[in-house]
Image (cartoon, rainbow, N blue to C red; front, side, top):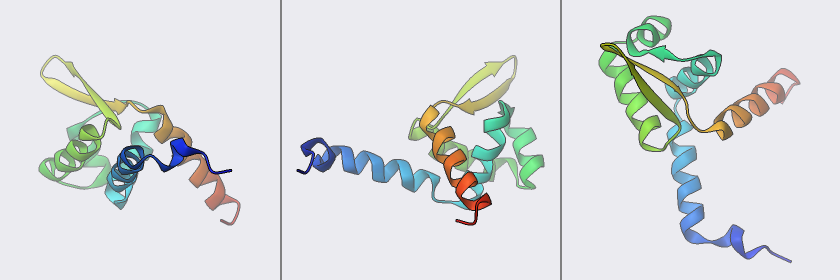
Length: 101
């Protein structure tokens, strides 16, 4: 028997948008860094070897999907993983990759 809640179009659209936000290598690298702990844009740029505007653009996409959140610490904005599903998905994929896919 097919579960009706799985076939809900609105939910499927939300999930598709969620995965689209994760479907860029830079955003996956951001996720891998943020899993270790919160970071500011400047630090992310240095770790990724990317400009601050580029990092901010990717963070904006992740933020708009509720994947990351931010906190102001003085004049600095730090980002963190907001949606715990991302950690689970990322760790599952990394473990699969380490085990030969």
